[in-house]
Length: 149
Image (cartoon, rainbow, N blue to C red; front, side):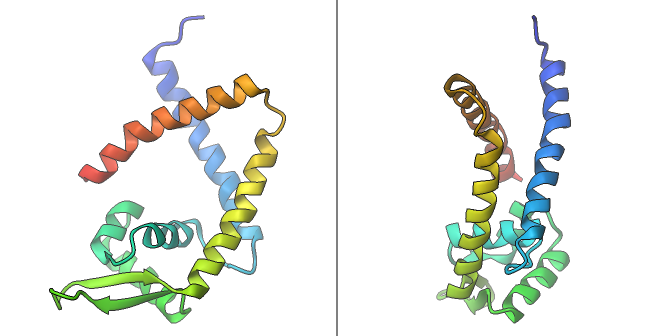
């Protein structure tokens, strides 16, 4: 079977939304956290890049600055993240995750990771390796694009 570039592009286009719907549904079931996928991704990004700016988070998540600011306000009000002035540039706001935010993030991540592990548990070792390889390849293609934007 010969697979064309267009075939692969179509498979990505068809598969990614299905996977994301399943992840969103699982996150919604995790009532303790009460996080949207965008909030979860925001917490995860801030956790990985402590002190990140609002514009960097907005760019990563794919939201406008006003929308990201509103989401950040909600996360600050819930005491999941903090805002502080940058040490050398008082105009720049730095975002950091709180211990409560880290707890919710870890709990949500663990629950969702277990769900995804269960979904792939029936795959053989070669199939798992193929999925992992494909995902690493895709991530490499799109991470660069996200950093350039």
